[in-house]
Image (cartoon, rainbow, N blue to C red; front, side, top):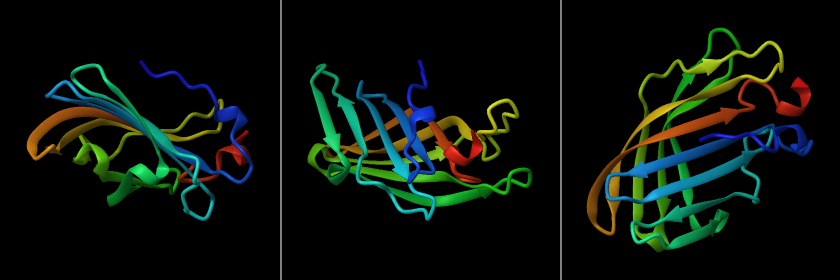
Length: 152
């Protein structure tokens, strides 16, 4: 389930976000987000949650995970440049995952809100605690064509 709670209250120094939701075949679930600025840098206020198969919860902050953008797709409509492949690492939990878009063109042009989204399904593969894992995921990206606050 995906609910949007804060885009109308996004700070003026932020352009948008990258939000990740992952379900691994070993029973692990993960959610993480990155808030990004208009110049492309990442805001320090980012976090995530990992739920292990035993239902233990690990809440992590920006310094506990990394997200590398590995490939991009550029919209011919909005001119936004969207990442479509990522590598996410959570060293403390020994997690190293690669997320790849099922299809690159998953941009939503929403005329009513003037906020464009890139969102869609991901294939997930990688390792957790040295063991191979696969899974599925969903990613939502905003602010890649223009900052959210300038859209409203």
